[in-house]
Length: 487
Image 1 (spheres, rainbow, N blue to C red):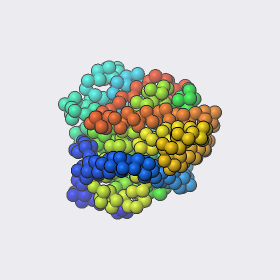
Image 2: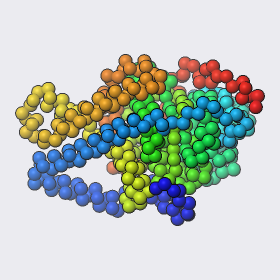
Image 3: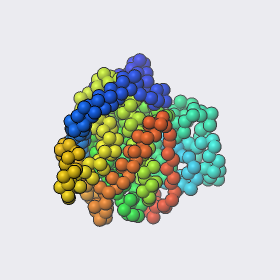
Image 4: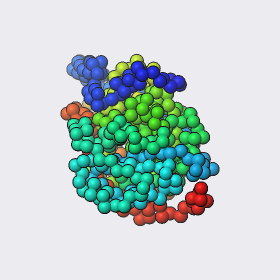
C-alpha cells in the first residue's frame, strides 16, 4: 500500500483492528485456527509421532530460514535507511517540537533528565518537554515540585481515574494527546524515557530530517547504553541493541518494511499519529504497535544519525523481566494485527507482510524453541547417541544445525554492529552473546507466553532506573553551538 488513506472509516478500522484496549483477546478465526492446529497435531501425533514432529520441525525450519534470510537481506540495505544530514537547519528555522516524558517512580533520575533536556541545542520557545507523572506517584511529584524547571517545561499529572484498569507509558501518552491537546506545541511529537540522555543536537537533526524529507512521517534515533561495559550481561544487551539499531531497523526502513519503533527517541508528525489512532494504552509494546500501524497506513519511517544514551539493567533477572514485556508486546502485536488477515495482507503488501511475520510473529516461537534444538543438536553431534536418533526425527537436527549457523551469522553481525557504532571494546564479550540469548531470551519468551495464556496481556512489568549513573553526562561533552545560539 503506497498511498495514505484518510477517510474516517479507514482510520477507525485501523484503530479497531490493532487495539488491545478495545479487543484484548484473539478474534474468532484466531481461536478457531489455534484449536484446529492443536487438534490436528494431537491426532497426527497419536497416529504417527515421528511424522507429526517432522512436520512441526519443518514449519519451524521455514520460519527460522525466513528470519535469517530477511535479516541478511536488510543488513545489505542498512546504509541507506538512515538520514544523516551534516548541514543542519539554523535554529530559527527549526519547527516546534513537543516531547512527552512519561515517568513512574523515577524520582532518582528526574534531575538528570531535566538537566539533559535543558541543554538541548534548540530554541526554548520551539521546544516543549512535558513530564507526565502518575497521581499516586507522590515521591516523583514531590521531586518535580522541588526542581526549578525551565519556562518551556510542563508537568502533567495523569489522574488515577483515567482508564483506571490500565497502567504504563502509553496510557499517559494518550492522556495528553486526547485530554490535554492544548499543551502540544507544534505538529511533531516525540518521546523520551525517564533515564534518557539524548545528544544535544538530536532535535536539530529531527527538524532537519522532517523538513527536508516531507515524505517521511516518523524518525527514530539510535539507543545505546552508557554502562555497556559494566559486565557481560550489559555488554550482551549492548550487542543486541547495536544489531537492532545499526543493522536491522535501518535495513527495514530502507526497504519500506514494518519498522518496530523503539520505546523512546522517535518523533512523529501529529496528523499521522492521529490518523492511526495514537498509542494503544493497553499495549505493553506500544512502540512496536505504532510502527506496525504506520506501515499499514502507508507512512514511511527512517532512522536518524543521532544517539540517545540509556541505562542497561545489570542483572540477568532484571533483563529477563524487561525482555518478557518486550516479547509479550510482540505476541500482542501479532494478535492485534492479524485479526483480519485479508486487511493485514492488503495493508502491508507482500514485503511488509513477509517482514511482519518474520520479525514480529516468529520472534516468540524462535526464542522459545531455540534452546531445545541447540541442546538436541549439541548432544547428537557430541555423542552420536543412538537413543537420540531413535526418538527424535531427523529434521530436528537440521533445525538445530540451522540455529547454530544462524546464530553464528548473528554473532558476526553483532561484531560488525559494535564496530559500526564505535563500541569496539564490546568484542571481548562476543562469545557470551549466544549464552545471553539462551538464558535471557528463552526465559523471557516463556514468561511472556504464560502471561498471555493467563489473560495478563496488558500487565506492565516496571523497569527500575537510576541504579547506575553515567560517568559523563551527554550535555557535558564538548559541543559547539555558539553560532546557532546567536540565532
